[in-house]
Length: 156
Image 1: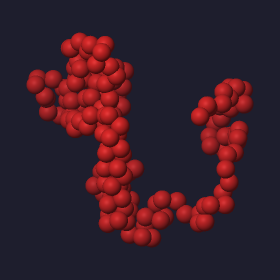
Image 2: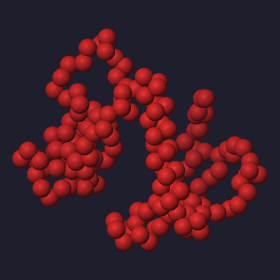
Image 3: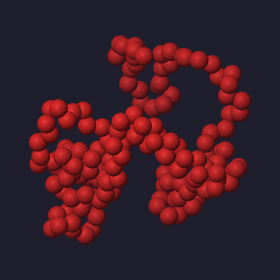
């Protein structure tokens, strides 16, 4: 699928959401039988709790329960298995990494104010929660040479 090139003058900057301009509409709304968002559906079915997520971790977090938690796990498993069958190697990486790991992928120093720093040190270095899996996965190959005939390397 080719993404159309939209001239910048057709998508002007605005002061807020009300200034957004519809450039193109694809498909129709006829299959959308109800007009409920995911929070409303999750609340009514008692499978999503924004209140619990906020209590535990603050705003923008949720707790998935029952069928929705199960669906979340099954979707993760489905896509991992799909990629493994397509030749990707599954890896499970740490969620906490060192300053040198973050620097090696360009996260530091640029994004330091946006990262979650851990109060304890790791191997004498500052420690951070990873922003994405690319940070530890990329660092699997830090300080090593990758032979051209081993490319491409695919991880999931």
